[in-house]
Image 1 (cartoon, each protein chain N blue to C red):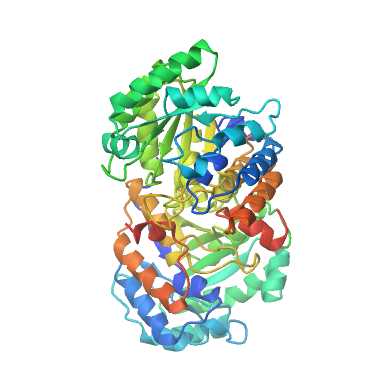
Image 2 (image 1 turned 45 degrees about the vertical axis):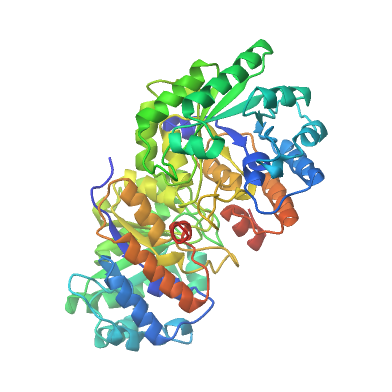
Length: 307
Length: 298
């Protein structure tokens, strides 16, 4: 009712990336059983999608070396999706063998970032993803596409919206059901978010778009608000704001799921997620990681004992 | 459409320092304000003329007021809870003062031990004296989006108190989300009610970031035409109602967002960050500004 009148989506799907994007970017590596426990707890919060792990070589991402064990060890709750990252065909096959039923591929809107991150050009990476998409299509496995550096690149600086739209369109055309636009270094503001989305929305239907905002400069919630005002109805976030920024030492990364839900609740937007249960899961993983939460809602709530 | 310009009201030296655990010596306060005066900020809330019995951190209000460089074009308002405080402030050189009301009866009772009506009657004396002395008065309304004691606060109540203070002669009303509990939803509802009674050009928002909602709330206020925003360098000032939680929104993070929106503030972000670094070192604490955290290592 309230959200309808304001032109905002009535329902927003939250994609929880803590166990993958979050843990991958934490200094402390977490044992397999803790990862599984975290995911099982998140499965009980009402979250519709939980990114579980990454089928990349453990040489590159040691934090995700236990991908098979995690995939096989988690409880699979009905109505919850458990996507995993698959950078290439090999990773894809490995993921399917381990029981994955949804995968994600990661493109970038910046050539330099693509080169530095996965040692190939955007075009070459798209070719690899096309192989994954083809196999996935044959097996009826949905594929989610990520576009990194959508609002800025640690190497190139400014990224033009047209480039983001171009890469998004390539991923969407190859069969990705959803494109998650990532502000990888959190430099974006409501100004650049609006311009970027306007360009992308010319190429991709709104219903297939998601935003993945980092809070490195404190702009995430304002950027997410801008996106949902434009009709975006899928938002990525990370429990307890897990995951620092590999490009700015000591700075924060992912926006905290708790803080996003608090805002959406206040806007009268339905997410299906129980905020208190997410805070409990956040408390669990922060204890295991021996760190303070990055969620302000959790900080404020645990201090006063009220929600 | 957003306003072309936004006036940033810097409350670090008062609201910020008042709510920090560590007390800062007078020369450091003066240096802080002097550094802020070099950043392009047009309004810097310098101190509070309350009894040191209640607010020991502001005990040196006279020395601070007399010690700072007062640059032309910059306003240095001070808090004055009553006529006595007002007179002391003017004697010490203050040219602008602020008074603090609240949209919650319980909060007013707990905070200054009287009802909203009684507090406004006290302020009436200050308003009269200020008018006579040609001193502009800014009015604050606390608890506009929620109260630590009463919980929900009705937008109509906020509008009522704001209207009273505006009618008394306050040139600007700063609407404070004192415990940071508001969201873009409640901010919009509250402003809609207040804007029926007070012109939007006389409104400011004072958002706390206790629940991480400040910039989103400020964004909504800007979208509704508000063009004055309070903030605190380095996000100084915790929340007295939630131990260990944050309070004021960081000026650096606000300016970063406004810059990204192409909104003019006149503030030099680098100089602001340097000032934040200075005061955090003096307080022996980490900054609450994410922009500052991200930038210092790049």
